[in-house]
Length: 376
Ligand SMILES: *Cc1c(COP(=O)(O)O)cnc(C)c1O
Image (tube, rainbow, N blue to C red; front, side, top):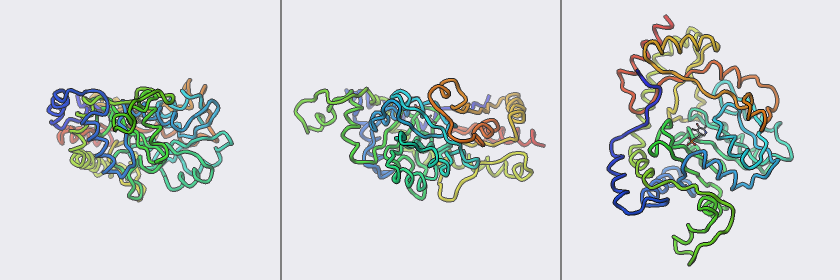
């Protein structure tokens, strides 16, 4: 079988985890956590990076940090993972879903303004497949209406928009190091990027169970106390050790993924020419990270036939995101603003192909040949 995904492994993970064990400190903000944070602050030019247990936790931190109150509205696409919405629903927010663009499957920035009401508090762009949302337009709307922008950059680490790293453009950015993402912290992990300096102090407090323990560790206060609401949003240093191995190899992982992505794209271009499939489209201002390679078929039926064909050849290809507004919880906690012209239709024809760091050239060739024979 050729799996759909396999966690990235570069080979130095165990040695770093061993070294974390020997350091005598495994809880949050140990040596490897610091290395990961500093690497990202430097690499992406971010004011403050805080490692977290998951992107879900980072999104929850963001909702606490911008003081979401019951009844506040948060604008986002419906074509996303549940955590994008759940984080705000946990604070009592009403989710306002806006349609996506059919080219990138990102939130349609031209539809956001009409969805704003006096209760709107934030916009949450999701950089689908590591391809940037139209951030200039989104930041402009946010500044005109004084809204927060929380980037769900779970899939967007190492991607850029007009040269700017994703996750660093909004007030807060959230990364995922889940094993299905480009880099992993041993299966689960995340990071919160605080780009608005005014939010840094409270972010540290919320992450440390509502205490100012981070200031205490830096010697800025002589004891720490309960200061605010908070939770435990720290990553274990064992996870950070795993992640550090991957960040050291970040360019190598990125280059390999891009090569695999390009090979799919080149091989499938002739089929796209016949009109039987659509390939991902890349706006010129977006440099992507090859998080995902998907094709779009004509409809759900065509997609089902291809999935079956690939399965018989021992290849797992999957689709995802039942649009949130059509799910039971989405109907309860949110509403769709305007017409759903693209979200449902696009979600029913998209198919993701195996793409992961350790996918061999041979296995990719098997996938490509199987696709070519299906379409011939
Ligand atoms: C993976 C993902 C998440 C959740 O990430 P975790 O680290 O698993 O919590 C959130 N949003 C999007 C868009 C994702 O792809």
